[in-house]
Image 1 (tube, rainbow, N blue to C red):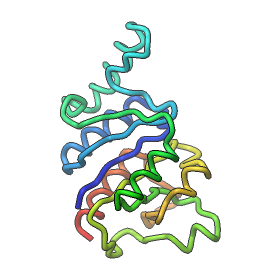
Image 2 (image 1 turned 45 degrees about the vertical axis):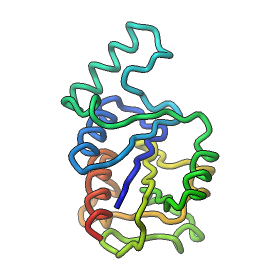
Image 3 (image 1 turned 90 degrees about the vertical axis):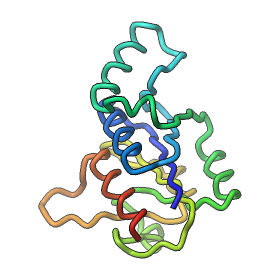
Image 4 (image 1 turned 180 degrees about the horizontal axis):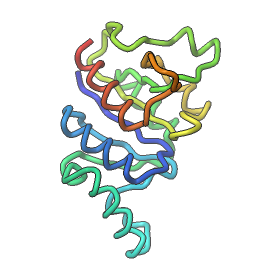
Length: 167
């Protein structure tokens, strides 16, 4: 299975680095950055800010920031529509779903008959915004057995990518 990640509005540069490290280790093809997600080597930033973010991302990525193909997109909804047109399944990693979205939920480990998946990751506290969730074919839920309601986004990404590859 081919997998691309979308990191939308991820707040922490350390989470970005951890996601890139996990992505590289699990063979993810691309990491797509959108919203205010910190980007490695962002040429749009002043040099001192770029250097600071690069150090933070690299601290967690341990070299994967140089190995995983990365791209930034300004119009994520349009990009997701293009991916759908190119036969990619769009899956949101989200556990706070509306009743209508709940009908499109996959539980971790359920078989997904897809060759190409775009896995959308959202902001650490508020998740994926509604306009982006509207573009998702499915939502992947990771069952929780403890008292917490969710995992850290980088941990959830590793669990989800591994499960998708082994479904």
